[in-house]
Image (cartoon, rainbow, N blue to C red):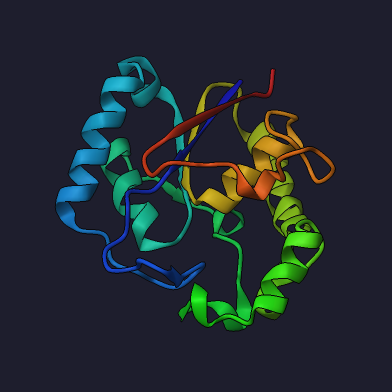
Length: 184
């Protein structure tokens, strides 16, 4: 079983903003461009037969609907982005430096803005993966967020974890990128 984790298209007007779970807009053209790009990188067989899940966030659901058409993707609460608590909606440069430093020192356990820690996100992701294993034997696509993808890849040993030279939550996850996990 292959899980294809896909990051949503780039949202509009969020430069410098900690948006986390906030609903932020994604232009129609960005959704179409991402869907076209992904269709060229995923086989038609995968797109036609894979179960398709999505974060409930509109920036993910829009892309998931295009990839799933004429079917509908299944929203999964466990695929939401990390909750940044009081940081959400604030500019990164307005968040006190000591709070960002505290997060950098303990990226897996610190709860930015009083929201979720990366470890809490990992619990959600692992719960979703267990449910997927029980329900499906074939490929699965999931349109989700960078934080969820980083945590999933770190837990699968695909990027450095909390003690590695490059903390997992700093891994670059481009918009519209695909990250494959082999659950076989």
